[in-house]
Image (tube, rainbow, N blue to C red; front, top):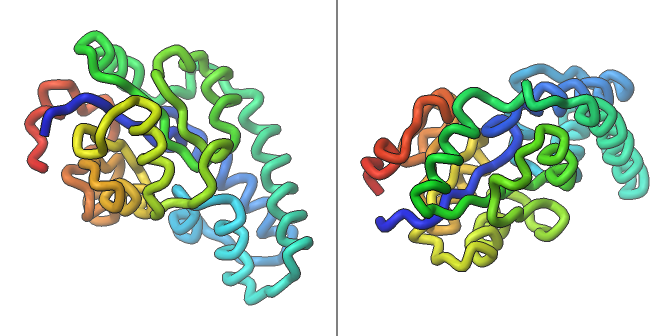
Amino acid sequence: MVLKGCIFDLDGVIVDTAKYHFLAWKRLADQLHIKFTVNNNERLKGVSRMDSIEIILELGNMRPDLKKKEEYAALKNKWYVEYITKMTPDEILPGSTELINELRRAGIKTAIGSASKNTPLILRRVGIEKLFDAVADGNVVHKAKPDPEVFLAAARMLGLKPRCCIVFEDAIAGVQAAVNAGMACVGIGSPAILSKANCVVPGLKELTLEKLLQIKI
């Protein structure tokens, strides 16, 4: 492939917001008397808020109406926003800004591809909004991963074809979305969990542009 663009998921790839999602979801689950573990939380990574609600309600064998589901989603988001409004640049994951700056110096375009509607707030809080040429997030796309919409939208914003882009993802649904978009994917996390990625590394600090160009597509 001729690499022209890199599209990054935000939560768990560039910034450490996964813990805040877990805390907010756990708080909601506790309120509903539903047992919710770290392993359960893996199913929510890269998934939209309403789809996440469905998963949690499934764990508790609960079937409330849509209005009640929306109330639960709003409550979870309220708690999550309370957490992330206190974020600082210290919560940027190691190696993230170094890799992105290297890519930009080489003329490779960068974008965010995230399901989160809170993406703009997080980028501002940690001070990295200027590192991206485009932001495709839950405010501009409507289909949740593994649907490829968010990554295809990011590629369009960058003016690039999917085959010229690499996606960086930490979630099973996100990796599948990249595959569905016809893009190469670097998994961030466990090779056992992210087996459909072209390669998997523990974090962005393990990567350089040279290493990216060696990935077999």
